[in-house]
Structure formats: structure tokens, C-alpha cells
Image (cartoon, rainbow, N blue to C red; front, top):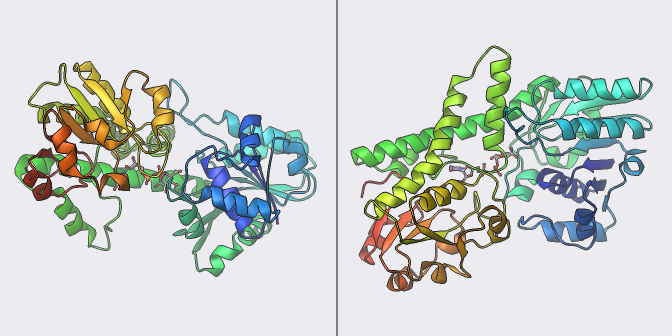
Length: 435
Ligand code: UGA
């Protein structure tokens, strides 16, 4: 199959590379010539474990290429995936579809022969209809179909998620188009990945429903965590106790500083907007959005409380800045609100992150950056674990404590065992743990 990816961001680059790895012939496109040049030179625009090697392997085998010339790539392609960004629109929170529609117009101009155009970007219900209308209007004679094929991969585990998906959702309006996308995924369903074929609108909504449900699950356990702290219970044990019930499931029940990233915040908001527009407001998701938003800032108050009620003039060390481990992505990271809250309260903030400091410097220009966890802790009045990078699980805590001004450890990911750190002389605060 000849496949084109329009957009070489997270989803486009990972999906395109994995499709090439299945044996398809893939071209990943991007508007940004510098990004394409870097990719051609083997440099990745994002940090994602395993990606660089997989790209190199497939480029070497001649199955994967990068370019900026959409017309040349689309002519003769079997499937063209739209994997451009759908950020929150400034001002109203609806998904900004301008990149998707611009891609549709460009694709329309370049179509030759039967082509399936696939929306892989997370797009609101009805976007596929609009993409179809745009192309039909520009090229009334063109032979094409528009399919929705949402992606469920997570950053930091993207390749594994793509190759071992829980399911593949194909939203197609006709059997021929469905057949093309089944062919694209053939290597996966030979591996028994369930394929769910639905109408296009249903597939579009399935993606939002999945992300909103996961965001709800996290927010639910975060509120249980707050209650645990008040009543002397342990949220990790509650999570295990409910998660062992198959109807609930153990995943996405880790209490923490609130969800962040490039997906949950914008997708929950866009779903809220779609539902309001449709006259069926989703009050649960509306509440999830509000609760999560206030939680991030509340984490700064938690730190202040752990420091005895004031951080004025104090130095607070943050371990981890990215919204989750194994990524350099800082989008909507809880650390942003935590830093702001601490600075507003008069603290000096110092931080260390294994991969995120490049992006962080642009977003948080007025904090100090340390070279490693130990220099981050030096002279600090409190150390706050914000992102659960594996490197932070095996720290020499004794060494950390001896260099700190005050032995205060705020563990927003419940990485440490209370007894262990208290034995070492730390004053410890986790999330949802009675201490
Ligand atoms: C999420 C979904 O998990 C993917 O299925 C989806 O494809 C993706 O969005 C997307 O729409 O593109 P991602 O944002 O990469 O993936 O990362 P997650 O692992 O889902 O984490 C999101 C946030 O929730 C992070 O801030 C994480 O720390 C937080 N989280 C996650 C918790 O606080 N507790 C948990 O138990 C799980």
C-alpha cells in the first residue's frame, strides 16, 4: 500500500513509521521544512523511546520517506491520513479545525485515482462530513472516500501502543473504503487486534468518549485521594480495592497532580463544547474539566502547607516538569500551574527534568534549572516530585536529604513508601495518603 501522512507530529510520525514497519510504502509530510530536514538527517523532533531507531530502520529499507511536497506524495497514494493538530481554539475552547480543512483542500487538488482520505487527528463529530464536502466541492469528479480512524496511542509508549492496540476503530461509510483501511492494518489484526467498524460519526465520537472517560477516571480517583487525606485512608489501597473489580479495571487510577498533556485537556473541553452545541450538555465532563483545572494549582498549596504554611523566601526544588514520564512534552503540564502558584507565594523555584528542560525553558523562563536531581535538592527547603520518571525511583534519598536546607519531600505521584522516607528523616506528604 502507498500511504501518505499529512502532518509529522506525534501521531503522524509514529503512525507513519509503524505503517512503514508493517511493510507499507510511507511518506510523512510536514509544512515545516526544518522538521523534514531534521527527520531526513535522522534527528527526531520529539523525544519518544524507540522512535529514532524505528525511523532509521525503515528509511534504510526504503519504505519510509519525508517531504514537504503534498501534491507529489498524494498523487497515486492508496490512503492519505490527516494527522495535523487540532488544538483548542483561542477564546471558545472548540477544536480548531483550520489545519484539517486546509489539508483537505490541498489533498483535493492532488488526488489521482481512487484514494481513501483518513482523519487520524482527533476531530469533532461531523468533521469527516465537512472534509468530504470540501473535497467534493473542489473536485466533483474525484474518486475518493473519507474515513475516520482515531488513534489511541499514548506519548512515551507510542510505538508499543500503536503495534499492540486494544482495538482499531474504522469509521467508514462504504465497504470499499473499509477494505482499504483493513488492508493497512492487516499485520495488526493478524495479531488479533479487534477491529471495530462503525459509521464515521460514531468513530469520531468514540475517540472523545474514550479520552473523556479516562480523564474522568483520573479525576475521580484524585477526589477520592483528597477525601483519603481528610479521613485517614490510603488512596492506593482504595484504587487497588476497586480496580480488582473487572467492571472498573485497575488502570488510570493513579492519583496525582491532575492530568495534563496535549490530549485530555483539549479533548475534554472540545467534547463539552460539542455537547453544549448539540443541546445535550455533559455535566460530568464539565465538572471533570473544572476539577482538574483547580487541582493543578491546589498542588502548589499542598507544597506550601508541607512547608509549614509559607514558602516566602524559600527555595523549592521540582523533580520532573513534563506532563508524564518518557516524553519532553510540556503542554498543559501540571508543573506549569504549580510553579506559578509557588512563585506567587514568594518562592524561588529550581527544577530538573531528564528530557523536558528544553521545552520548559521557553515556558518557564524565570526558574532555575539544575543539571541533576542532587543539585536540584541542594539547599532546598522542600523537594517536590512532580513527574514519575524512573530515574527518580532509585535516588539516593539519604544523599538528597543531607544537602537540603529542610528535609521536606512532597511526592505528587506516590512513588515512595511513606515508612522508607520517614525513616530517613524526611517530613513526607504524598497524595491521598494519611500521614
Ligand atoms: C492520552 C490517552 O491515554 C491515549 O489513549 C490517547 O491516544 C492520547 O491521549 C491522545 O488522545 O492522543 P497521553 O496524553 O499521551 O495519552 O498520556 P496518558 O498516559 O493518557 O496521560 C495523560 C495524563 O493523565 C498525564 O498527565 C498523566 O500523568 C495523567 N494520569 C494518567 C494520571 O494522573 N493518573 C493515571 O492513572 C493515568
